[in-house]
Amino acid sequence: GRGTDILLGGNPDYLLRVIRALRVPGDDPPLHVTVQTAGGFDWEAAAPVLAEVDGVQFDLKVADPAAHRRHTAHGPDPILANLRRVVALGLPVEARIPVIPGLTDDEANLRGLARLARDLGLARPTLLAYNPAGLDAYEAVGRTPPDLPRRSLDREAWAALQARFAAWWAETR
Image: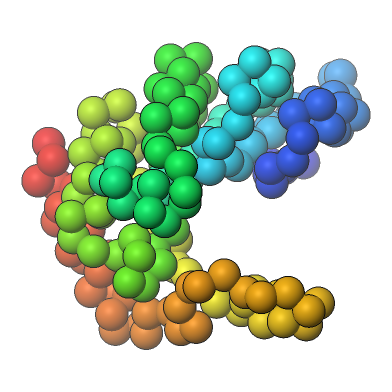
């Protein structure tokens, strides 16, 4: 079979054209398409794309509204509204949490995101390990990299965080 293609972000009009070009009538098994988003999209523009996909990977980053504004320069309300709308469509939604040391890895944030996912009826979010490798690319093209950590969690710290998150998730039931 052809498996699952994941389309990473992009302009909704472009995504719609790509999805329609990839799907071949009569494919057996049919091509399954999942889109990945951080949720900061215009609902009206994205609705036609969402009508064509089989699932959504939705990244959740910061639970506290004030901290969200501090880290992203905007509030979380439009993102949360989009998440609720996607869930209401009945599409499979995989919540994902990018774990950035010193920004998104604290207990209050992870517990808050676990509660949010649970309240929406989602499965336990997938934790995504932070990879700082892309920061060097900014300098390579003459741009100033964002103020993000230059190191990810080591294996031991990552395993401990995953274990704590599993326990916090269990507590949200």
